Image (cartoon, rainbow, N blue to C red; front, side):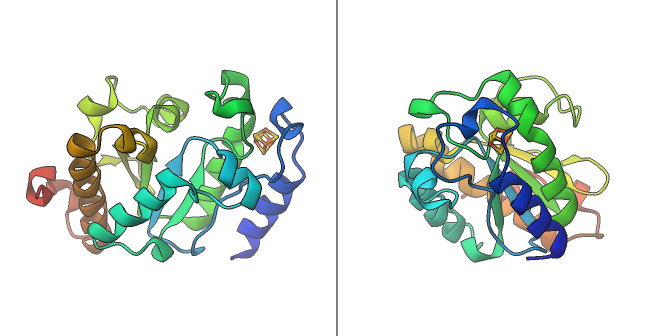
Length: 203
Ligand code: SF4
């Protein structure tokens, strides 16, 4: 972990900036290589994440690990974090104020890791950064599978693994194709990635 990531982590571990700090067992800052070319953003910690302090360790996390493997991307090579670092009670959706209170940490993590592609997984991640990064309107089905150039990195939107769990037949192959596209953008950095199209990676 680089020094900047360590500093961000330390602040998250002691954060009381929103009411979610009251009920958490462990904040979940995120994990992965400090120079990961892919940075994945989920929604918020669930029960198992809250228990362990690690992101995506429950059922959706196991599916995420499988899907990454299927796309040819080892989980150990990506940085995984979420919009919200502390578990909302009963796994309810994070509130607007909580998202706003926590968003600075995520943006700082992205600046510290300097990934080639940021993958927003699910509606909460998408909605939390849509305006900041001027992403197009529309639901995930409409805007996923495209690379949006945001200067220092590209953004790709896909489904949340928990959403894939509920609709595996349709969403799993799409998720895998999206990750393959992101990985190809990493491999082709500086080589005209804008020509990449999702169709090339659909199985
Ligand atoms: S959710 Fe984010 S802003 Fe709220 S207490 Fe946890 S780290 Fe702080």
